Length: 237
Image (cartoon, rainbow, N blue to C red; front, side):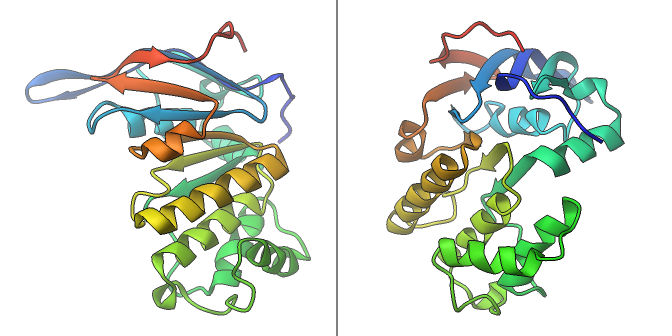
């Protein structure tokens, strides 16, 4: 499946998400707008329970909104069916998670090359994976499994996996949340170095003010609503 290009990498308009339980309807997100142009960066911040991870899941098309729209490269994300959203994620998105999400029985090399296989497969996937591990400082550790790698090394593998497919959009959920301050600072430097080199658009959720300060835009959520945003561009796809 192919998708057209557009100037804005990602746009959300009037996103709303509510869930219903025994106590009634709970509003998780309320009328959220955002726009990040190609190669830009946005940090989503706010206290726990403010809706940050819910928003990230909607931007990835992993969850469906109660109302509102998301466009990725001009494609109406929720105008696609589930298979279409999965195809778009495979073609254009990369992910980095707080708890790394590596596969324990695969070594670093195959954790990274798996991303290429999911994106469609390449004959040189192992060579590309090895090259990316070298770029993140893990040359010589390609055959180590996650259980014998430090937290910082596991996050480097996760970054290599995210960037090896050269995604147009990278979504990161608390990428330094499980790391000590010194290791987290090195991961932040590496994340933005790779983002700049590949001109990847970056949207991340974080509690880390040092990480948020490196982004071009900051969107603050409280109780599901935007209370501060640094974007001045018109919110049009």
